[in-house]
Length: 356
Image 1 (cartoon, helix red, strand yellow):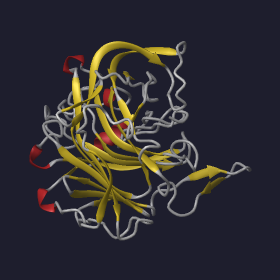
Image 2 (tube, one colour):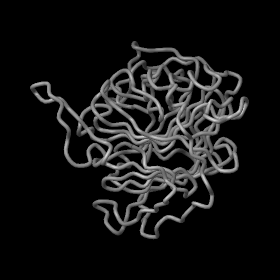
Image 3 (cartoon, one colour):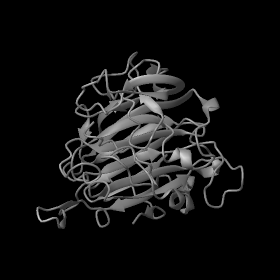
Image 4 (cartoon, rainbow, N blue to C red):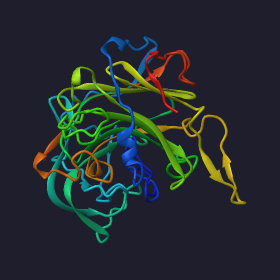
């Protein structure tokens, strides 16, 4: 990763610490919990456009993880959020089983590189020991796209302290370090099954929310984010079965879907990228920056950290581990109507929230 540029953020929360990462936190945890949460309606499901053409996929039908499509990140860095896992490339933490990618987190002490590993320089002296292990995979330089539909079918882990995510980071960082070059969170969830602190939930109600978010603005600490949380219909939990998480990304607009239900939209009317010129004055980049450059996919399972440990039942419940994050498939489509802008294939719902 780039200098701590992996902000695997926490969706409705935060402003991160360090040069850019998994959402370093400190700020709006209470605000995040207080936001109104949409409940999806199956009546709003719509089939995707027939003009989306499949251009990249992993059905996980091989015996081993396809290293032509994915790379492992290896570190005990903690994501800038004080996460408690070391990411490894061991088969114990990530493997193929029954045509699915399994990322498994264990409670076990592990020592590894203390820094991110974007330059592949694994230090044997600058190390750190953490109490959990897991895995984080990315498609950087093996699957990179500007615009398209990104669709992932998965079953999420459960328990206080769990933090699975499907997200995207810029490949080239054209506008600077996090978050001036942007981050797209397709799906994040924390503490599924723990006692919910969602508005309106009675005491003891299990947590079932998932979140979709954008991070943008200027380089940390002048970054911002916008997003929303949702619940599945019929009080279903994303940890009890498989659901399909997707975004449709076109020039100037990104839309979020669960099980083909369009629940949120963000547009370039509200996102932006800023930088300081030589005189120290803030300047805003033109057009629809930063979401007009190549991005790649990341799939990871974090344990603990600033977001999950400060909400719901707080902390990490070690008794729930090991936990598994199961991914059935990853599919990437481009819009045949206009591959340059991604426009012409949108699936829209009037009930979707326009996030500002």
